[in-house]
Image 1: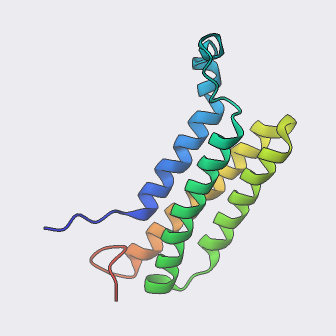
Image 2: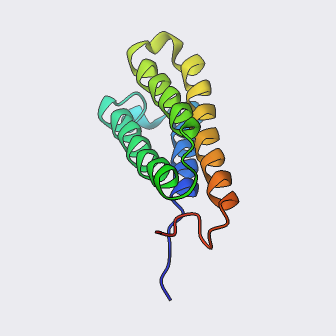
Length: 129
């Protein structure tokens, strides 16, 4: 029995992990700098999370588009979300205001892609034709 990874679910999970990191983690772990640990506003970590979200999303959405539904809308939604993530890195004063729509667009794109894939009546949303 072969285990299949649902890339949309993985994309939603990574987007939510990014949102938790950016929104809640600073409150919970505000004492980490006392111990010399700095993952809050660490550029390498932030860009790494964006790269992970981009990689997973690109694979999942392209696969859904190409193999199942041919709807470009989830890709557009995802691209807008990634743009907001990049802008969040550039305009730090507006970080929260850019993060919220970024997560909403990215999660919505994955969810919509997931729904379109299931609507195509495939046995699996990522079954190769």
